[in-house]
Length: 288
Image 1 (tube, one colour):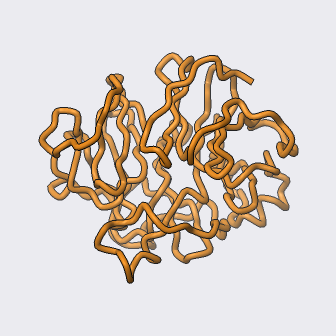
Image 2 (cartoon, rainbow, N blue to C red; image 1 turned 60 degrees about the horizontal axis):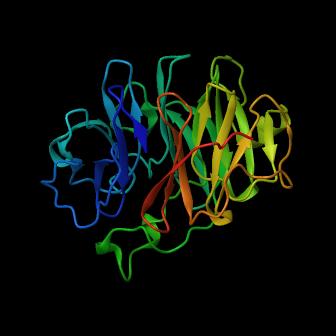
């Protein structure tokens, strides 16, 4: 999910290959691509979006290995390619501290990395690596294109085992199988490169989380809220700290496979994707 600059909540339907406008809520079952609530269609595994300050909307197509400029909506097959030949781009973000665009990619089934795709491009060498060798979790069947079944689904199992979110002058990224969140300094010239080097540099923020999913920074209270899909919960993390969260009470519980968290324009309403039920939850009174 992502809020546009003009106040629309766009939600990715990965297996349907489209982005829908869910601002007003409602029942989205059985929509055709011609429905007014379908913002963009014809996509190959849309996973996340980045809203650029000039109004452009970039969207990751994790199965197609590309980022497209989907600002005008419509048929994504006709959209302007921004970057191609990427290995399963998943989480994408714009960071105003460096005026840059970053995305997570998965060059292998066990490792992911965060790369700088600000300039776009068609070659892997076009994109400097911000963090490398991030462990990703074992995948689970489902959420793959229909054409992949029954014999070719493994290559499509790109999931939010590592998710990146802008926090002040840093990028906070998750390490799903280890239940960790780590700060990467994007402004330092001598910043660590690999995940292990970030740990050695005491950049660990949180541990004891449950298979972290999508996350978001709330500027109102300075906390990062992260989905824990297999725990059915959302946890609040202090991005300035370094501690164990295993026994902390969660701010939301009882959800079915929550994978993405966002806040409304006033930061007072929480929106959570419930991938297990195909819903978006709207939650109030979520403060820790």
